[in-house]
Image (tube, rainbow, N blue to C red; front, side, top):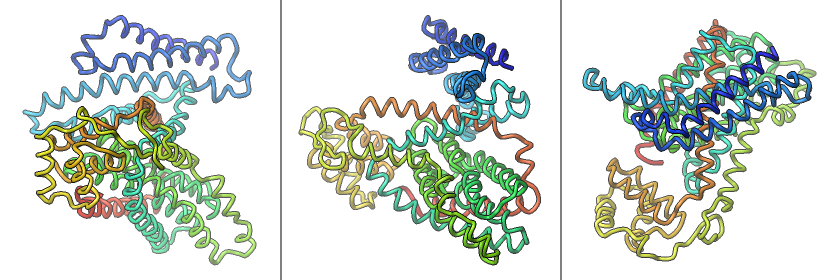
Length: 522
């Protein structure tokens, strides 16, 4: 098997390096130009080159020194060939398959009456998940590739941590206050509904407790966190994980086309995915399938998801008390809830908060802007940064129309009309929020342009954003490679019935709340 790993590393690493060289020479320029990807050559050739060189070097090392000779080989050398394969699939999906599906969607639109690629979300995220599922169930995952596939969850969490640097204080204040209200109601409602449902179905307490946590909070991670306090057995975990995976996968493929069909905006869909889907990977995947080329939907979805995870400690305590009721006193005393919370609480949430904190104190602030308190800046008036008269007139008509119902957004726009430019980060955030009150594309672009004139993003943020998209693309392909028919078949009997009914009701209620109560803005 060590030779297989070495050969795989040499072939995959060498292939990636060769591909990068072919790109740089220009042999694929015409193809990429036809696909509309000519501007991406520097980015993905760089990724192919550096990853390829790393995998190639590890492959050479594996020939010289067999895997297992060093202490950390299982996490350093063993995953390299699998990582190389997944990176190759990321490149194929993002720069070849997605553009091809776009071309097919437009070509078949006259015959079908709709663009199937857009409606069904055939972008690099969805295609990656589908390829991963087909690969593991048809081709199978060879032993040399498995360690690389297992890195998917870690890479996904790195993407969520990086996402923390993409939020502004204003966004977090608005989305956070809404998410706390919605998420708390849905989490607690789901947990108590499952406990009641389990009593009706007469399921054993350990299975009911694990189902309640998984369906109510954040899927498998929550089920694993609660398992010790409800004394869950292996069979309970098998049924629960199978059911959670099955419900989550169905939701992942159903949510995006439904959201597009009813005309949900980024906020509405993000809130629905963050509330109705079961775990972080599914939330991120659905948000990126719905909106793969900006991160606005992803930002909304993940702040709802993070809020859900932050409620996990409370749910662990609630379920511990519920399980302890009627149990023998000695069993109750053995439950060390505090230790369980520390051991099982998702570390990536702390990383997300840390990155947001760095952003908030100005760690990533563009050079040339003065810091005032929490990452605020003042902009010296400049004619180059001012909007044109016709642009200001369009904004004035928009404000006078009464479409803006938020006093703070309206105040920011009125100040923009007076100053003719944005003068602080807080105002910039509100001006961008004004996009939620209109469907006029020209007006939306105008608001973005007003922000760009004074609020250029630092190169650090742009680099981090690109890394983040690669993290998600990589992690979701690896996630697909862990979705087997056999695992989903484990969702049998009462667990499947409880999961299907609860998952549907949760998604259904969240859909109507997000569609009709959120309207166009938060």
